[in-house]
Length: 210
Image 1 (tube, rainbow, N blue to C red):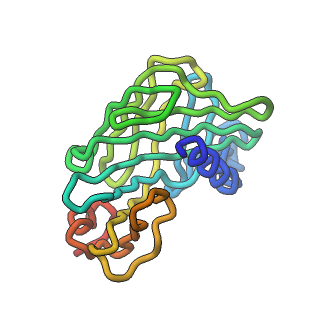
Image 2 (cartoon, rainbow, N blue to C red):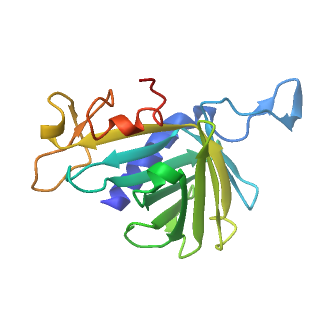
């Protein structure tokens, strides 16, 4: 499931990459232009600069009586081709601390772990075999870095993010189906207005005033 999610995330970044790569200042072609505020920027240790859509913070309450699952993911692409993506599963206290330090793994991602994928123009996707991903949310932006791995996977990133909150149907009478639920239980529903008791605490994180 995580691998399929990565491919979908990278495909979305490909659409967003019309504004990707390294922006150039028309008045001074040799000078890099500041990226638009709605663009998520990834800069690798090797000097590659990629851009993509806002990062996602997906909150899911599979069981209303337990802590939510929190998944953080984003992807960015370069004008010349290729993409860089990451997916992490955060502890529930991330929603209070707004900071995460996750161990990078090359297999399925569990809580407290992250996966980093590199897609080159040619060849199969590759995953970082180790390292650490650290990120934080401050001032309405997400920023962080990966370290302890090769230059292609080592990167700094910064940009906007969006928040979704999915809950059991009984917690919300009307909402859109959550596309990520694939088990035998009733599909979760997305609380788009953050009006349920479970999602209300994250309304401000999602940029909604209550």
